[in-house]
Length: 110
Image (cartoon, rainbow, N blue to C red; front, top):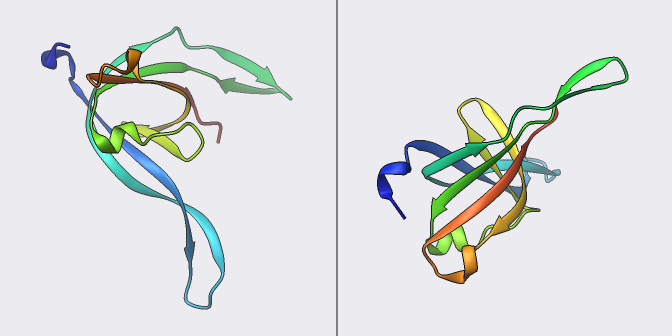
């Protein structure tokens, strides 16, 4: 893996249950891990849904292997790249060689 290709910083956020001052519980996204990644994107797709134009872009991030990155799942984590948020669709451990991890993501609909 070429380290020089890891040229953009991404933030990985974890979904956690927090409670407020009076004990109400709600889900919140908290920063879990930050690292540099290689970005490879497909062409952006836009579709119309109920008269709205929806951006369904897919993007892949390749990051270096570490213990925190190895714990990533597609259900409890998301990626922040720049000002955009991406849901993790799949986590590929690249033949379990412990060198890199590929995150296949899709832009969050807001």
